[in-house]
Length: 354
Image (cartoon, rainbow, N blue to C red):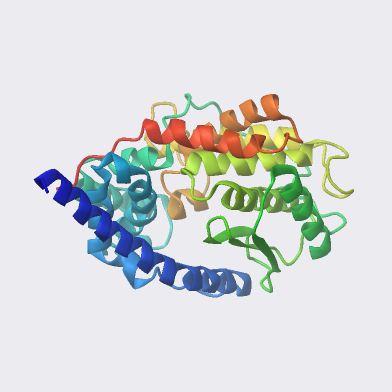
């Protein structure tokens, strides 16, 4: 057996072992994360296998083999952000009071960690992993949409379960989506993919009484659809799937009464403008808003490098909405996800391991 074949076999065996360990540890961890989020308590850290330096090394080593690249890239997307956030300098900066000055320190720490591990800056790394590119130049910081956060008649969990059944039927989602209502008033809606293609938990707010809250729930249900239809996806494709599904809130009669709001189209445009502006702030782009809020938005502190993916996801969702409409034919949505996934991963390049 030649040296190249031996390298490939060794990389494949190591990747097999890593995937098996993650498949053993991650589901229980993610169920625990969902429970903690629903209860409004501190969430547990990533499991040991995901934080072990050798795990990321295994995934990166497998990336150089074309036959393993798809599997390896999925693991790098999971493990690289964990490794950077685990760097002592990053963890210390993240523990500070979230001010704009503290964000500047945290940004430098993340960038330094990324360059040390990958030889490229943090934003470039995240954009490559997410399948995103830079957004258009920002405009003005968008004003709030009047009424978007105004309380009205609340929806109960049964209405959310009915909406899920509708979405699953429209898009051919198979598997389990468990909807859990939070016991904490402050919990955000959030989807937890326990096992791609098999099990998702969606935590919804305790009170679902504003158009904004209803949109976010549909958005998270869209993530559940994508996970059950297509499995692990690049961030930009996953966000596009969620954005596409959530556009049903804009279409009167598409779902049960209580979901539609005429404010949704304006709110979508504001979200797009915000993503572009926040991406420009992250990249320190000329024309970016200068500290437009008293404190940094939550996303810049806790979900760095994602804004370009959000902005790009809306463009993909635009294409899907025009091509597929609100009720795609059988298999059409899965095919759209697969095609977009292949397009994104075909252009993803990461430096080889050092």
